[in-house]
Each structure stands twice: as structure tokens, then as C-alpha cells.
Amino acid sequence: MLWLIQGKVVASRLREAEERAAQIVKAAEKEAVTGAREAKVEAKGMIVQAKADLDKEIQAQRAEILGLEKRQLQKEEALDRKVSTCDRRESELQKKEKAVALREKEIVDKAAETEHLVQERTKALEYAAGMTAAEAKAALLAQVESDVKFESAKMIKRIQDETKEIADREAKDIITRSIQRITRDYVSEATISVVAIPNDSMKGRIIGREGRNIRALEAATGIDLVVDETPEAVLISGFDPLRREIAKVSLERLMADGRIHPTRIEEVVERVKKDLDKMMIEEAEKILFELGIPNVNMEIVKLLGKLKFRTSYGQNNLYHAREAAYICGIMAAELELDVKLARRGALMHDMGKALSQEEEGPHAIIGGDFAKKYGEEPRIVNAIAAHHEQVEPICPETVLVAAGEALSAARPGARRETVESYIKRLEKLEKLAVDYKGVEKAYAIQAGREIRVIVKQEAISDAECAVLSRDLARKIEQELTYPGQIKVTVIRESRYIDVAK
Image (cartoon, rainbow, N blue to C red; front, top):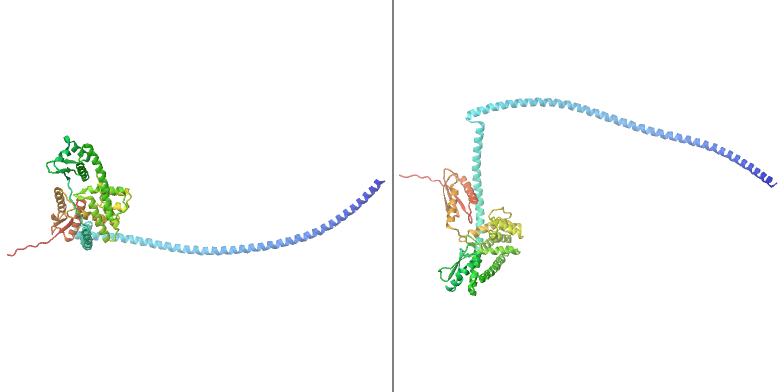
């Protein structure tokens, strides 16, 4: 019974469900119809809007295409105008080219005609002148060259005279003031030194048994000891002043000590060498202090000290360097140049002579290399290396060093030379002058300080005399070695002689 009731309930609920489902289906169908209508309406609206938008876009594209067509048409029209212009210009250019070609042909024809006329006239002129064009050209060039040489010689002489007058006046004034402020006493050193002895019996002790003492002294010092009949004196002979001084001082100390034998001689000589080294350094330092030259490398000081016992033509090199330094300093002050630089370069200019026996080459170059090695500045190195014109000067102080060195060396009495070399130098000086064309006689005067050249009046002009004096001076500089400077004087005179009867 229960299940029957339940079945009825289920059936009732099923019918209700079917009815609700049918209602829902009807409502859904009705809603679907309504939605479809609305969708159709909406779709139609969208289609209309899309069609309107498409029409607008088509119109815009059409307007743009029309604009592009219009611009293209304008460009084509402009291009047509340019093409037309180019065609017109090309036509004009072709006409001008034809005209130019015709003109060139006319010019070529006229040039050929002119060349023919020139050749004919040249032949006529050559026939009339009696010489070819090349000969006439050469003659004209020779005449022009001669005129130019003569005019240039006159101009050179005038400029030289004016410059020399001013320069000589200034240079003489500076040099005179410089030299007058320097006074130095030189002792002419020879190759022999004399050592005084207390009595003649000392000679026997110096010689020693079988001459062993004198041989030991000569071997230790490298000099010759001359013990002769000269009363109370022993002669020391040698070309090296330093060795002579070592031997002299050693002998004096040995005589004062009284112990003269080979071992003692060697000890004293070694001690004297060390003492002289100190003395040379002290002498160099003293001169450096006098000149106010600071900060000099000790190796350079030692080398300067060695110059004390070296001479050149009898002139002491160290005192010569000191004098040159003073002269350079004074001239530098007069010219408002670097006084310290000039003094430093002049003092060191000859220090290469202390090394010339150890190294090969000119002492100026050797000294310059030594100064460079021990830290001297380039201007000092140049002043040392260039004082004999073996390198080019790089500053005015270098020129002053060369001038100061020459002034110190050329001072009367500063140096001496042998009679033979002196005569040979004068003979060569005169021969250099006589070798020139147009020179009649030449005389070396003033101890070789001046050469006077007498020329033939008909063979050489006044302007050529100026050229001759300059050329001869350059040749003397190149081929002769001499202290100081040599003045070249060329004399040309006219003599007209008649006899009154």
C-alpha cells in the first residue's frame, strides 16, 4: 500500500515536472524568438554602420588617390618643362661646341702661321746679327750674370762695410773693457825643472850606490834626472809637467828626510802623487769659488785640476781657462746674456786636453762628451764642443766661449811657438793669398796677425777685391791652424806716372 501511495506521489510530481518543463520550453521559445528578433535588428544596425564606415573610408581613399594623381600630374608637367629646357640647352651647347671647335681650328692655323713667321724672322735676325739664337741667349745670360755679380759684389761690400763699422765699434769696446779688467801673470814653463840641493855631496846620495837611487826615482816618476856639474842643483827633464812636479816634490822631501833608498823613494813618490791629487782638486775648487760656479761634479773638478800641469804653447791650461771665464763673464754682462753659463762653459772648455792622451779625437769633442756624461746641461756641452767650430753653436754663450778662449790665447805673450813652425805658418799664409788670380804680392805682417794682399789694378775691380778678401779669409780658416785671428787686407791702387822734361 505504501509503495502504491509513493508511486502516486512520484507520478504526481512527474506530471508537475513535465508541466513546468513545458512552461519553461514555451518561455524559452518565446525568449528565443524575441532574442532572435533583437539580434537581427542589431545585426542590421551593425551592417548599416559598417557599410557607412566603409563608404567613408572608400571616399577618403578615393580623395587621397585623386590628390596623388594630381601631384603626379604636376610632377610630370614640371619634368616635361625641365626636359624641354635641357633639350634647349643641349642644342645651344652643341652650337657653342661647334663654334669653339671652329675657333680652335682658327687659333691652331694662326699659331702655325705665327710660328712660321717667328722662324722666318728669327732666321733673318740671326743672319743680321751673325749669331744663332742659342749664342745670343748665352751672350745675354753671360752679360746679365756679370752685371749681377758686379752689383751683388758692390751691395755685399756696402753692407759689409756698414755692418763691420757698427760691429767693430761695439766689439772693440766690449773686448777692450773685458781684457783691461783681466790681468794674469804667466810663467813660461819649459821641459826642465831645477831642484836646489844644500851641497854637492847630496848629489852622491841622490845617485846612490851604482846609481840605484837615481834609477829608482826615474822608474817611479817616469822622468829623467840629470846630475851634472851644475853647482848645488839637480835638473829634472821631462815633457809631462805633472811628472816633473811629482819628481821635484819627491826629491825635495827625500832630501829633507835624509833617508834616500829605493824603498823610501817609492813610498815618497806614492805619497806625493796623492798629495798632488788633493792639491789639484783644491786648486780647481778655489777657481770655481772665485768664479762663483756651484754644483760641479767631482769628476769634472778632478779633471779641471789636472789642467794645472798641462800647457799649450807654454800657456798654463788651467789659468788660461780661468782667464777665458773672466773674459766671457764680462762680455756676457755687457751683452745682457747669462753670465754664469758663459763662465761655466769657458772654464770647462779645455778640460778634454786632460783626457786627450787617454782617448782619441779632438779635445773639444772629448771634453763635451765628458761634461755630458757627468750631468752638464746641453748648452754647456755645446759650448765645450763648439769652441773650435767642430760643431754648430746653439746659443750666444757658446759663441762668447769661443771668443773668450781666442782672446786669452791670442793675448801678446800668452803663448809661444817654435821658430820653425812659426815661419812655416807665415809662408803658407802668404802662399794661400798668392794663389788667387790677379794677386801681385802678399805679405804676412804683425807676427802673422795680418796678411796684406796687393792686387793688379787692371786685373781686378774694387768690388771683386771685397769678394777676394772674404774668400781668402774663409780659405785661411779652413786650411790653417793659428791662435787668435788673422786680418785680411786687400790693396788695389792706380798709379799714373809721367816725366817732366
